[in-house]
Length: 329
Image 1 (spheres, one colour):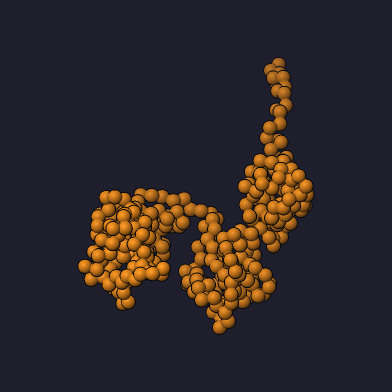
Image 2: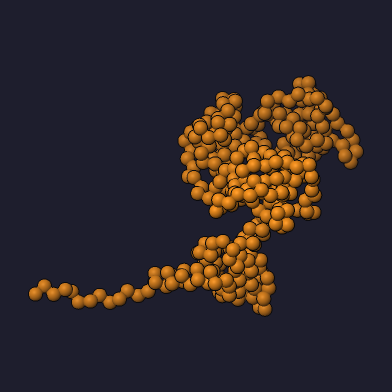
């Protein structure tokens, strides 16, 4: 925390830390507050003098914790936190600046509840900052998202009503492992019992969620972001196979997980995957890789790369020599 923060603000921050992290030691509290352990103990005493029951215990699992039944004061924001909240809301959802937007109305209530010294800058930022809409972003139904979050937290199998991009609708049972937000879109990473496979479902295409009495256990050592990225690169309509002349260690930093799986091949490597959009794969992904490559499959990707190459070749072709001026006779 900045050195100019008042003792009251630091004490409230200490209270927030103890609420979210029981058994916090004096050293940990000092580190989070940016003060010495002696100062951290002083802020604990300030809380106790204010009537907040802060208990302490010794031993390897000891530390400070709030007493049972503690009634907490209203949430306290620093000016930096308030501005960060508005910036995050505008970045993730440009319509937040609109008073009719669901998130916008909630953010407006938060800004109005802030003290004048903190809320003034947040209100100005919200009024005068503009965010361009993200054409790839999609905002799911909050009720659907809430039901999924509860199912993930309690490891409860769900019955989903899902709508495909083509407009087809079906019901399926799924074990919801995690929700992941990626490039403005919300995904449900789950095990689909209908397909008996791992699936990534767009949450904005889920029309309904019903909890079932059946539970499940997620995979061990589970990294939802990595699993989502890997799954996005498989199971699409058009297969892809791209061979690079460079070793995997050099190519790997240029390969995004949705592009497929990179494997060693002789002195180079091969990228094997699938895509639903060969043109995008060629224009946005392969064109940015600074190594020589050969597209060995599939035919749709080969055609997309050939079309892209023809466009660029035509763009740098020499102009035909100018002919003689037209006769005026």
